[in-house]
Length: 290
Image (tube, rainbow, N blue to C red; front, side, top):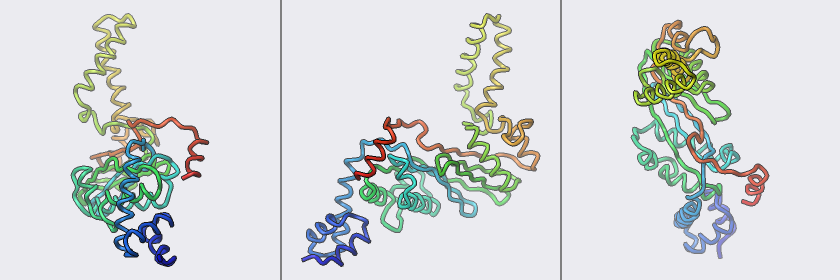
């Protein structure tokens, strides 16, 4: 006979349902450690069933410790779960694991040890407990020198996260740059970061546009050069008009404060991913039935 107190203890340790805990204890002769493994194995099978679902919600988050910083994106199926405290705890565990180690790939991150097994173990366990697919999508870990500053900005509760590094300027300046990047969506830091093939492709499109407008070839060439500069202002952080003062560029703002932009990483949750088509009422109904 499995006691209620043992079932309660297993529930508190695993977060699994009462019946699952009772079954686990029965299957493992009331050995609580074996029952935890049994539930984990069951969780793996549950998680596998969710593998083909679309997880394009979630959060992007940042952790800074001294001269190291990490930015991550962890996905869930719904925005409800992204706001769940257990999900937030998972994200924080992942951040701590990355900043304490030196992973190079997502596979390296998933193999990192946390307080509750590997990162992958935790994702599997939380997927089983929360009831929807969770996945680790991407990360960037960066380091700075003592004369450099990190700027971090989280927008809309983690829908957008931006991490910047500036040289010879304050954290406040770095944060202003991060806030600008969150709003204006630059793809690159500076002109030289834009791949040549991307510029040439844009140049060809702009030239075709000018010719279609009836401009002679030599005039079209000059128009293209002007429009390319406008293109740089759209995609390059340094070239964009600064949101707090449109009369100067972001690069000029930082320079006026004695500094220079070194790097910018901007994560927007779900960018480039397939989003599921589902209405709000159906989503609420699914949550209530889980």
